[in-house]
Image (tube, rainbow, N blue to C red; front, side, top):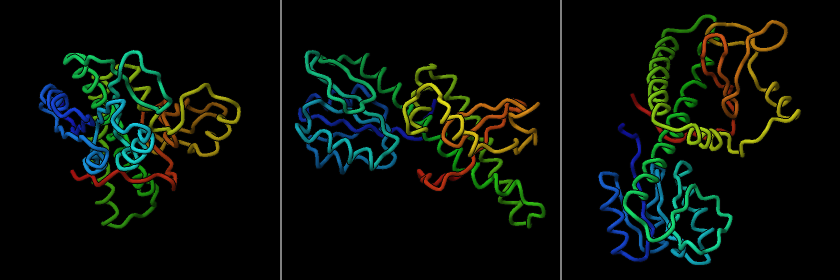
Length: 253
């Protein structure tokens, strides 16, 4: 399927090897960086995947990764490394032992492109539904507010279709990995404190079907991510906006 973002940056000091990787990864939008400075210049907010050689930045790898992720929070990092090398805790998405073969590289990059784009679409959906929730609760909306609501509803419906399309292409493990990234915290078993926090921010009822959530005789609700829930009655996904959420970028229909 067509992706919203396809930018891949190959961070590899050996230009011949980097150009071979780029050839394999065609038709993605591939850019090569042979120095740390070129890497920081190449990565931007629409970068989906970084293919990073383990020895690319030497002892400054952790700092380089921090810079790259700050410029592109959506990007997934695939490290190429010697099979006998140690595994530093850098929070990488995948590792690929050398020698690198075409089939392995293209398969992993395709997987990470799916994850990055699915993450982007989820963020765009939450970005759309947050203001939509406010408009849906207006008792007497103005004409401009009704038009804005209709526009957001069309955009949300379109994004839901894209989300479903991505889900059919992804494994359960890949979907769980993106959910983890959306939450910004590792996936773990719920504790009593988690339940209390979830209840604190969870809306009392569904904004679409108006069914009350949980409680005595209430509808079951599923928490999908930070401040995001799915109604067990009608399947509607809604979000209670958190002021710390940041926009990923502009989305135009």
